Structures are given as structure tokens and as C-alpha cells.
Image (cartoon, rainbow, N blue to C red; front, side, top):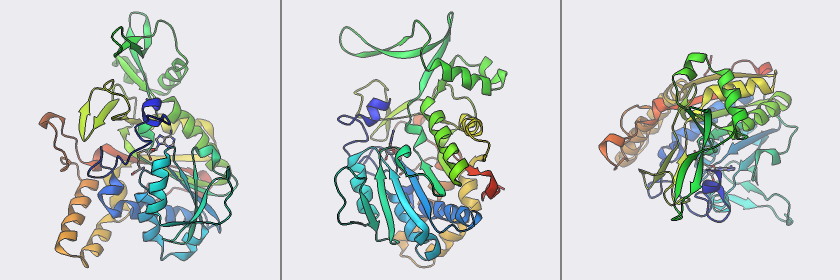
Length: 377
Ligand code: SAH
């Protein structure tokens, strides 16, 4: 899954612009500017709760086209004390998407950036410095840090286990004689089995008893530990928004090409692979990694955006726009908070995805000293 998505030559994310109406999927920041604005409200409130520190790292994991961050900065640009404290760090593995993000943030490159040093630019949207990195570990330590992960966790590779006569076996991929792919079960325990054991320990027994298949995401568990340790020491918090479940995930790995579900093994690299995020395992990973953080949620995306005041924002925007913009605002609003059918869908009826309001959930991990973050009270 990791190779298919991020291989430097053939990875799905690496070379193309896969977002927006023409691309392979539609995500909230592309649906409406209000999404990034609301995430900005969340970040600003966290910054207030942190005591308005003079310098803050604002990190986004997997920023796609950079739309969320652009809307966040534009929305926050009037709050100078906040924006002047920010140093933005975009964690992105795809050079093509880094370029798009650079454009979305209307960045100007600083002079004398030498080879081998992480590129540093200035976003003219709010006058904030921006740097790019391939991993979270490369973001400098030592400053309070706000981390946003929107639709990032669902792209991290999952491992699937199947229950059989030999107990739990990992599902692996094999190459057949005619050079196509097929699923097989591993003959012996695999390294990911350690994560399966950990995940099952966190589950209530009856959650696992009824399942014949379990998905675990070691990368998500490790990333959460890294991020929780950082927040425990440097202060700040992380906001994770994604689709998923607040419990063990059984079988959710899916492939989407041009808005249609396709076979996972079909032409790897040409379709987006993603899996449900197991929010309960994120919570346990964070709590296990640091005694200095608290975990809040998950709550649904519609609760999250609603409590942050998206209703007031849509009303305000509607006061001052053309009929066409008003229509786009209303559609965007309902796609973000509603639980009806997603209107962009053109595939078969029985595979219609539901709106993003319920299936998408928000979770926060914050430094305990800062109290409970809004809107999780
Ligand atoms: N957050 C964006 C897009 C999400 S798609 C939005 O809400 O619009 C996933 C993003 O994560 C893409 O930008 C992809 O290139 C990046 N990505 C996926 N796996 C990654 C990894 N292992 N390391 C760094 N970036 C990754």
C-alpha cells in the first residue's frame, strides 16, 4: 500500500494532481473554503489556550494541494498576533504536490537557500515562513506545535489479518505464474503480528470475538506515538480528521479510480488506496506514548464544524455573494456537514458514498496542561 501510494517513481500521489473535480477524489478542503477556515478557528483557539506563545510551529501532514492551509491563512490573516507567531511546516512526500502547495500558499522563495537545506519560503497570504519536509521527524523540535492531519491517516498502509484454523494469519500479496497478483495467507507470524497483538489487547474481547478479519495500521500507531511525545514535551496539539471508526476495523481497504471503486490489485499506482482510520487505536497509542497528553473525541465532522460555528460563517458569506457563489456555498456546506448522498457521485447506485458529516470524525491530542480543546468540552 505504501509503495503503491508513495513510490518515488510510480506512486499514486507522486506525479499527478489527483484532487478536485477532475481528479480521483474530492476532499473537504476542495469542497468549500469554510473547511480550512474552521480548522483555522480551532488552531487559533488552541493557541489562545496555550497562552498565545510568540512562536509556534504549524504543521500539516499530507497537505494535498495546500487548499486547507491557504484557506486557514487567508481566514486568520486579520489576527496578526496569531499569524505572526506561525512557522508553517508542510510534511509532504510528493514533489509535484509540494509545488502545488507552494503555489496555493502564494509563496515567494527566500534568497540564498543552499542545496541540501530544507527549502524555506514566505507565504504572502499572511506573511508567514513556510518549509517543506518529507517526514514529521524533520520538523524542528523545541517550539509549541500545532499539527493538522486531514485525510492523512487513511493513506497509511494497513495490514490485514484473517482468522483460520492456524489462528490469525496475515494476508499477503503473491505474484501468480501469469504475473498477476493474488492474496495468500502467510505461513508463519509476520512482524505486523506484534501490532495485531497490541491492538487486540486494547479491544474489548467481544469486539474481536465476532471478527474473522482485522486491519491494523502500524504506521498510524507509530506516527501517533511520535506526535504525542512531541506534544507532551513541546506543548501544543494535533487535530486528526478522517473517515473511520472508533473501534477495531475489520475490512475497509479500498481502491478508488476516477470516483469509482476498483479492485485493489488492479493496476497498482493508478488508483487511490485508503482504509478506515481506527480512532480507538490512535487514542491508545497516544496515551501509551506520553503521560503529558490527553485525547479528545472522536466526534463527527458535523459536530466539530457545527460547534466551531460553520453555520454563522456560511450565513456571513451568503450576505455578500452572487447567486452562483451562494449555490456553491450551500452545496459545500451540506457536503461537509450532511449525511446524505455525495452529489458528485456518478458510479453504481449500490456504491453511493454517504456525505462527509457523519463518516468523517475529528479527534484532538493536546498537552494536558492546556485543558480541554474546543469544541471537545
Ligand atoms: N490533506 C489533504 C490531502 C490528503 S491526501 C486534503 O485534505 O486535501 C494525502 C496526502 O498525504 C497527499 O498530499 C499525499 O501526497 C500525502 N502523503 C501520503 N502518504 C504520505 C507519507 N507517507 N508521507 C508524507 N506524505 C504523504
